[in-house]
Image (tube, rainbow, N blue to C red; front, side, top):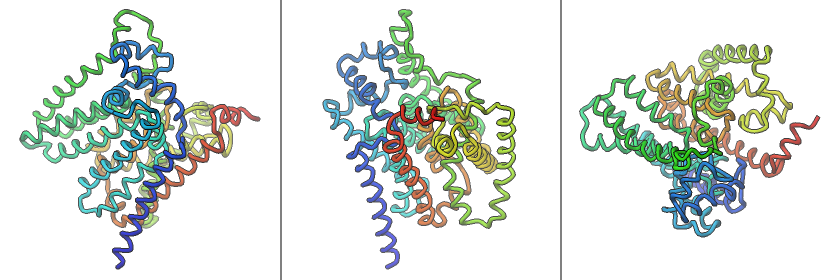
Length: 449
C-alpha cells in the first residue's frame, strides 16, 4: 500500500513539473531573458536558409543581427523541422522537441543507474524541465537545446565505450566510438563551447591507456566530421577578403587573460549547481566528517579570494551589467557592486572540485580540466553556458561516491534537488518578468545612487 502511495506521489510530481513546462510555453515565459532575440536572429536566419542555403551561409558572419553560434541548429530547423512556416507552430515544435530531451536524459540515466526505479529516474531527470535557460530556449525557438540533446547522447556512447576500454573492439564497439564522435561533433556545432568534449574524451583515452583501435577510430572520425565546420567558418566571403563584421562567431578562441578573470565566476557556477548535492550529502553524513571533507579547502579558497579583493584584483566583479550569473545578480540586489556572496559560492565550488579530483583523478580531472579552460575563453561568461551542463556532467560522466548518497534515499534526494531548482526557477521568473522586465530597468537599478 505504501509503495502504491509513493508511486502515486512521484507520478503526481512528474506530471506537475511537466505541466509547469507547457504552462511556461503558454504564458510566454522568458525566465532566462533573451527570448525576444528569436525574432531578430533565429527566425530570420531559418527563413533565409530555407530560401537560399549557400547565400545565407556565405553571409552568415556579416548579417545585421548575427548569431554567435555556428548555424548547425538553424540548418536542422530549416530543413528537418516541418513547422517553420509559422512562428507559433515552430515555437510549439521546439517546446515539444525540448520536452523529448527530458526523456532522452531519463533513458541515459536509467542505462547508467539500472537498479533505480523508473519513476525516480523520471523525477531526477525532470530537473531539466525546471531549468530557466532550458525552458526559455524551448519556448522561444532558440537553438541551445539541440546542443544539449546531442551532448546527452554523446555521454551515453562515452559510457558504453568505457565498458570495453581495453578490450578488442567488435563491430558494435567500433560503432559506439563512431556514434560518440558524431554526436559530440553535432553537440559542438550546436554549441561552440562544447568543443571541450572531444578534448576531454581524447585525453581520457590517452590517460587511461585505451585500446589503440579506439584512439585511431576516434581521430579518423573526428577528422572527417571536422570538414563541415571548416567549410562553415571559412565561408566564401572570407576567402574573398571581405571584412568580417561578426567576430563574435569566433569568440571562443583562446584568450588567456579571460581565463584568469573568469575563474571566480566559473567556480561559483559549480558551487551553485552542486549545492543541493552537498545538502543531500549532509543528510547522510555526520557533521564532523562532512566538515572535514570541505572546510579546509573552502576556507583556503575564500581567504585567497578575499586577499585578491583587498588588493583590488577582483574589483571587476562589482561592475558587471551583463553575464556573471544568478549568484552575482543576487549579490547586487543585496548590496550594489558587492561580490562577497559570489566569492562564497566560488570557494564552495573550489572545495567540491577538489573533492571530485581526489576521488578519481583519471576520470574527473581529465573531464573537468578542459572545461575550466575552455569556459574561461569568452570575455563575458554567462550562466546559460553551463546550464544544464554541470548537472549532466554530475549524473552522466563524473565518478563520485556522491551518486551512492544521492540514490541511497532517492525520494528525499529528489525532494531536496527539485525543490532547490524550483525555487531558482521561481526567482528567475520573478526577476525577469516582474522586478526587471527589461535590461534597461536593470541598468537603471545598478546606476542608481
